[in-house]
Figure 1 (cartoon, helix red, strand yellow):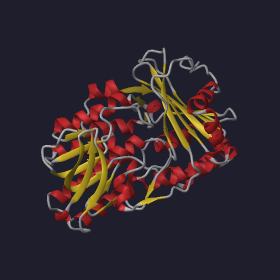
Figure 2 (cartoon, rainbow, N blue to C red):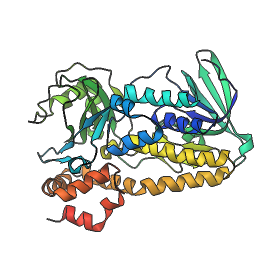
Figure 3 (cartoon, rainbow, N blue to C red):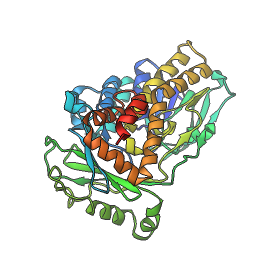
Figure 4 (spheres, helix red, strand yellow):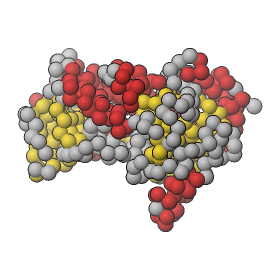
Length: 415
């Protein structure tokens, strides 16, 4: 573990995933001393999403990624085909069929390091291969007392002092746990499995993504750069015994074998070799009582994550970094106190995502009732304008409140 240039920094960010790296880049560009702490010594595949609407691409542009880098890390996807177990299907185009940019599938092995490189180029200092073992804050609201972080790496234990600490360390955030804000997610326990398969189709082929419902679960298939498709499987409680008996690899293979070929996707990837080991996540979802307090902030999945079905986790992560950067800068340049800035960040996140969270709960209610979901799917398939609006809402391209408007719900659900 290489020692940091200074044992004290302005901001320590725990986790160098997209949210942490994007925040580090924004703060470092403003002249703020940032330490970016990552437990993995090098990038490795972890359970995570790769499909995203154009909103995520635009957020990456605002973060600072240039057009050539975006072209390298993202593969255009013309539509997401949603399929129910009863045979209903419809396409969500996220505005691409009406002249907008397409959705994309990200190569996370290229995107994540590109964001870290962006942060380091801006002046952030990366500490890779270091685990944060403790977070000890000073007196509540006392900025001068700061936070002490215990670190462990190959060279043994060490410490770091920071005026502010940010948890960008995912669903099991040590920063959130230390702050005492982690709450139970009121959803049935689910398991997520993700990996990649080789795909013989060229990267410039216009290939749809697919989201297919299963009995008590679903599987997503999204093309990504490098001649691969990403497989993302979410399984509910009824799959637990099969997972315990057969293992994740066998269950995932059985799920994929049951995905039918279509004219648009004859599944040439089905026999492709796995490109990485299956990464799992269980339980899916995290809920926090607050996303910030005096001296600490949470971004990305650490700030709350419900379910990958409605997508845009990456977009939310990048927006949380954007909003947290504004709040942190207001503290460090003296425009706001720690408590005031934390409350401003909390309000901003609620404004951006409260309606989307409510919509996600509504979708979960339909997923729990396959007959009801199929009813809604048939209407989306038959009603282009309603379907277009749904795609824009799901992709964070229009306010999620549009999807909760009684007039929209009536247009969706009326016979």
